Structures are given as structure tokens and as C-alpha cells.
Length: 135
Image (cartoon, rainbow, N blue to C red; front, top):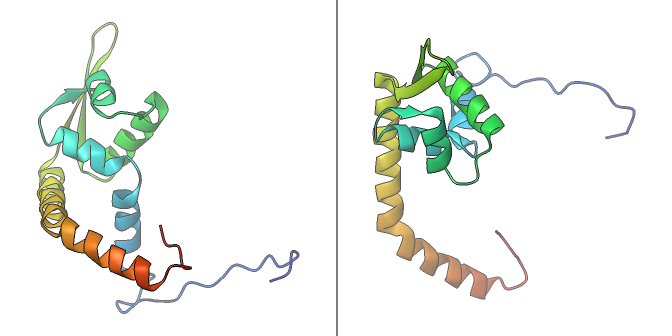
């Protein structure tokens, strides 16, 4: 592709007739760095903003704000603002958010069950393909 090419790649319709049935957008949200961690923490109960921030190492105030807004927009999180000074805000999972937390827990269980097998498979692959680094 040349530097001057500004054409937009056309989207290929999926099997349901539209772009990807919205699945890609949902998976992108769940695959981002922070959303799953926020959902896992909120599965433990209602949290204030600062409680969430302290419970998720490495998340900045800005990223937590963006993540909670996106999850709120998607209907996974409920945001409750109390008219106090300073403002007090709490977050909790919606019923749909709880169903996602259950799915995440199942994935975590699967990961724990298969981690040794996956590690062994990786070791075998790395020995058979020493010049091909995959991380």
C-alpha cells in the first residue's frame, strides 16, 4: 500500500448480514486492559470510585473513569451519585453485569484447570520451534 493511499477498507458482511452482529464491539470491551478487572472487583459488591481504584493496581484515575463510563454505557454497571459535598459515587453491577461476572469466573476456572497443560504444550512447541518466538 502506498503512502498516498487513503482508501477505506470496506467492511465484509458477516453471516448475519451486518458487519459482525455487534460481537466484535462487545469482545473489544471485554478484551481491553481494565474492564474485566473492574467487573471482577464489582462482583464482590458495591464500590466507591476510590475503593475501585485502590483495588485495581496500576489503573489511573482517568482510565478508571473511562472504563466505568463505558461499562455504564454498555449496561453492565450502575452508577449512583449522591448529592453530597464532595460528591459520593458508587458503582455496582447490573443483572447483566453479574451474568458477565459469572462467565468471567467460569473462564478463570477453565484457565486454572488447564494452565499446566497449556504450559507443557508451550514448552513442547518452543523446543520444536526454537527460532520462532511467540509471546
